[in-house]
Image 1 (cartoon, one colour):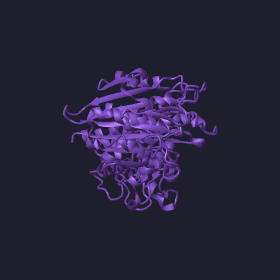
Image 2 (cartoon, rainbow, N blue to C red):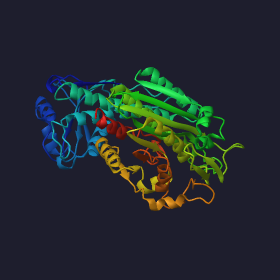
Image 3 (cartoon, rainbow, N blue to C red):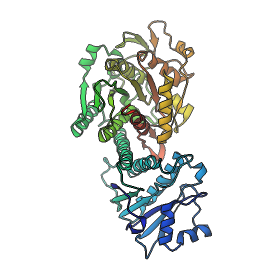
Length: 497
């Protein structure tokens, strides 16, 4: 799909489908008013008759004659005083859904002048253009790599987004949105790929390809021998039962000054999680290919950063392993010594994500990081607590937590902070080692983060539990691409500082 930005007048913009917005309550955007004038007041008449309600995400496709447009798609955007970024996205998604099924070969989207609640319509146009670009990219995503019969080719091939101007600031904002969407789609591709293809070595090859495609990325891959030498026995305990060897994947982007401390991203990359000896129930186990959602999000974020080239240094580390039962697998009750020197009694081999992450969190101390943010499909308890709408956030620094929460709000990729109080740490007490890897059923998401916090004491650190947000189940089953938007927004907000 070809997405472009234009500041051409709507009255002289020829297209097979023009997309305009009508609010349920509030002032009509200038683009809609101009379109209505060209149409001789047809939109106002339809609105007066009730054919156009303006209700958020409602749509009406109107054939058009004697205008530069073959058809006009009217999208309801709700009430001006209530329109939040999430509501705006719903309207954009509804518009994209109609466009995907329409016979139009090209379209013009005139939705950037629809203001959001409490914002200034002029200064926030860039933010809206970024959201439009990202939403269009992600909504036209398809994954048919493993279907023998491909779906009919979509007729729509070009979408032009109208803006008030074509200056650098607006172009950069739009391109950031497109890059974020492409990063999400890269994440979704990795997540949707079956585990018989997507194993740790395959992920490592994708990282090498990313470095070849973008000369601003440098990739290094550590094998099990190198990890053993570093003392990463906790990570290696997870891959012990698998024929697929573990990999530690490191991707570096240096866009800032040499003296600038890097922002470090750490992703859990369990390419398939059977639970190991603590075997999971069979129902739904196929979805455990998504247990590398944290790693996939790291890849997607790095691609977006490589495309936009912000002035910031970023290091991404992926701890990749496959968790399988076999005669060589780690047993419940085994004790391992982590890279940090702390010993861990493994009471449940299905609590493996924290075992790979803890060694990765120790490894990244060598970069003297500005902050470290890890992301992982870590606990089912997070799904019980927050469902599939919000990512769980826990942190050892309030400023970092607040920055991430704000980035999630701006990006429409929200998180919710949970406590990381010392009172929970005692649930990890072990009779035989420095700690055990589970803390029982109560507060499972919190105790998992408490475990990780023991390896992140030397820097500002946040943990994102994306167990409920990284993928969807049921009829819409598939990777979501989250939390790439949150991460990209956070990193871009700190670029050049």
